Length: 191
Image (tube, rainbow, N blue to C red; front, side, top):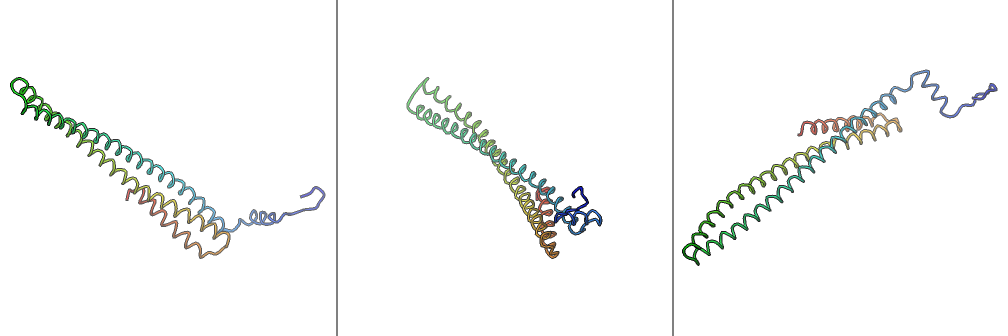
């Protein structure tokens, strides 16, 4: 607007004044609010998806560490078995005090091997448990990722609906929203 009594309107000024006076298009307003809500819920789903993926990776890393520790224990077990075998051979090749010494070593190696085996079995069980937790978290992550994707599709369809003013596209918006929310609930419930 100029100060000399002339009014110069831009192409959007009339529309802005009309919305201010008459409250605007309820279709557009409702779809804008829906889009904002979908964006918010989608952001939450995206965060939860990242969290579950990180948890899955943490469990997978823990499983790898436990597998390595179990492998180390089994290597130690094998070394003790080799020593036991040498002691058994020495018992047959020696006599007297030396033979007694090797016989005692055999018993010691048997006992040590049993302790090592128990520890290795425990570590393998822990590795399997961590692998199972990782798989469960990845399953949940896939639910969150699906939910986020479906909400993003709903947002895109809402934008297309606003631009084209074709109300039949709302079927896609609502359908994608419903499926996205269902997938999010499944992720939340670990299903």
